[in-house]
Image (tube, rainbow, N blue to C red):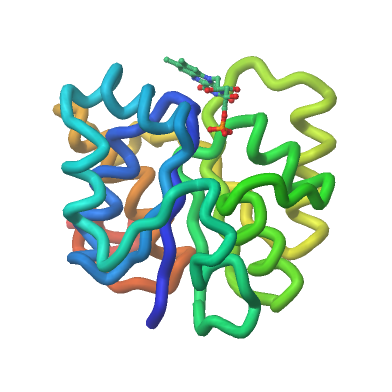
Length: 183
Ligand SMILES: Cc1cc2nc3c(=O)[nH]c(=O)nc-3n(C[C@H](O)[C@H](O)[C@H](O)COP(=O)(O)O)c2cc1C
């Protein structure tokens, strides 16, 4: 399975770090400049630490990267976290950087696109763009951890969201047991 993860400048960099670790080096990676800033603010790690968890990484202005072309094999793309800026551009069909181009390619090729926005409250503009993404076949998976698994740590909350992302990417994991089989 060929996967790509993109990180944009919304709050939620710990989700991306956990996701990259769970994917065990099998994902390609793009980080927007604002995504790099949020990584530094929220994780105390450097973008380099995130890149070291990927099979390859590309600059966000690199339109020659394989992710920019539908002819490059890719099964799924996850944007984690996804800023409202990037989500809105994707809904409008804009391709002004590698992340929005890769998302546009993923949609046009009928491949799996998972966007993990983090914003609150949501304006009508945000909601309309999310509806557009859903109608285009993308999955809008907000970073909204549940509490029914009785989280004790921040990692438990992060794992909740990352488990749902992996479920939607079709990647097996043991981050959380499904509710029905919970002991
Ligand atoms: C510390 C920090 C936190 C931010 N959190 C959010 C957020 O949670 N959601 C969001 O949509 N934008 C957030 N932003 C604003 C985005 O970074 C900004 O809209 C930027 O243009 C996004 O660019 P990108 O989509 O290319 O990454 C945040 C910015 C900073 C500096």
